Length: 101
Image (cartoon, rainbow, N blue to C red; front, side, top):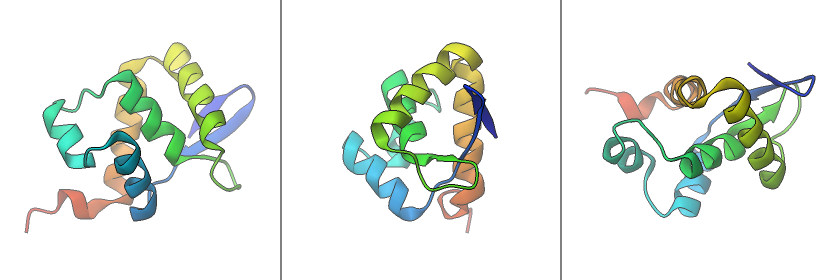
C-alpha cells in the first residue's frame, strides 16, 4: 500500500496493464528490467506507477493523475523504495515473467 495526500493506493498489474506500459515505452517489460539491471529510469518508473496505480477499493487512476502521484511518491518515498515496491508488485501479480521452467 502507498499513502499520499491522505489517500491509500495499491499497485495492481495485469497482462493488459503490462501491454499498456510496453506500448507506451516501446520496449518489453523484461527487456527494460534486464537492460537497466532493475534500475529503471525515473520516466520508466513513473509509467509503471501511473499504469498500475489504483486508489484503495476503486478502479485504476487516470494516467495523468497517476504521473502526478508518481512524482510525489518519488519525492516523498525515494527512488529505491518505490522501485522495490513496483518490482514486488509485478512479481506478485505477474509471476509468469519469473518462472524458471
